[in-house]
Length: 598
Image 1 (cartoon, rainbow, N blue to C red):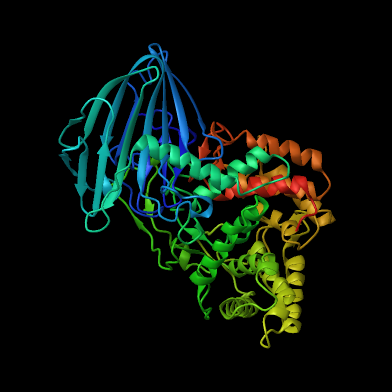
Image 2 (tube, rainbow, N blue to C red):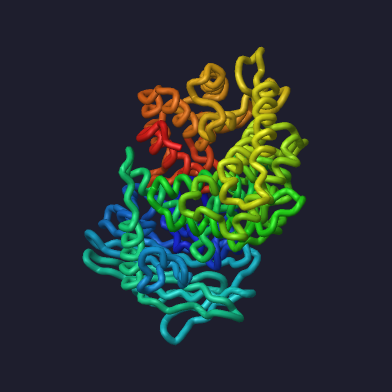
């Protein structure tokens, strides 16, 4: 099997989990219990780790052509296959709960993957190949034909119930195959439902009716949100993707759907992004706010406060599981060959153990942004969290850390970490009237000013003529583009203008892309959108808009972004769809609408 490009995949979601379906009609990734659970289809990471393909028998042969798009304002994907014999549409979705509307979407998703085949013209021969492999491909299930014509796949803790339209399927030892013909006007429904071997059984749905219900649920959800800025189509779609990455039961937003898609093919920087990062918290919150999704933002904040709990002397973890789990220890799956042979495949993420000093600043920035919605006097849990984080920053800002890029080498005095410490204390000073008698804004302000002086003194490199990535370093780092975005320095400050110019010259990778540092192998989309914001804030709105529109061209055919772009080939790299890339798009679009926004 040839490995599909990352950009060849479309994203399905039920706000409990998600799936990736390729242009070839194969579902190659689905972790049905929740985003960070074990896969039952994992061909994305190994050809033998399971898939479900449903496509014309002539797919991939001369004369076969594919068009696809989302049903408007949904994550329901419609793929049209054109063959010499005729055309057929396959519409894929993860089922919404019946009757779910508005913010009920995802609260009780039934974990059912729907596939509806519709004949458009001619008569097309179709082929189905169902090979589930639970536990990331470790298990080969027993397959049992059922009286209702379905097939039950059972192994370990997993039960899958497959129902097919058309002719009876052929059940083999380790897979189910089926071939059938579909004529113009004919509609056939297929589905696979997930259940727990010793818990909730699979749900039985009518796939055609359930698909219609799912479309209505997504469209009703989007109708409650209104965005009035520039690039509304792209912003609405990115907001839909962010909603699709939201674990509805807690409100946490997964950083991406996948694990271990590489930053460089054949490389080993392959990490599990199926968790929720506090670093991304303020940016996620702002993007959801911009896209007029206040309920998601409020739920995300509530999840964060509960996940952090009481703040002690230890650093606040940078990431959590989707229900607030703290220990997400990392291990390798040696049996998986990895995407494009990129090993290791990692489950879990040991970045949770790192000291990353920017994290309290991200959280307090989010509290500050929500301040008008949280009351004149904060409730006790929120007050304790804000006070605890503020005092932790006051006591530890001078320490080295691993930085915003989560390096796995030595701790350093990263400039962006210090700036976010400044943000934490600056926002805490503003919030002090809501924090009760233990607030100490005068002391906080003094430490804030000390941090600012240190950043301006130690972060500026006179020889380079720019702010660099760490104190005493001569290396540029695109994360310093955050300085104007968080209010540390205006974008028009001569030092920031010089820094932005240096980053464009030295870290620019062509096609609008910006690398994180000079040896970064690919353009990092979030940094590229930060550059758009800096240019807009500096009054260069024409250049900013042109750059933004070039970046839009790096989306795949259904508007999805991964984490990075190979500047040589234009190929998407890294985990996908990547929340931060879509957050960057939303924030940059709003900055182009209103450069002076907070």
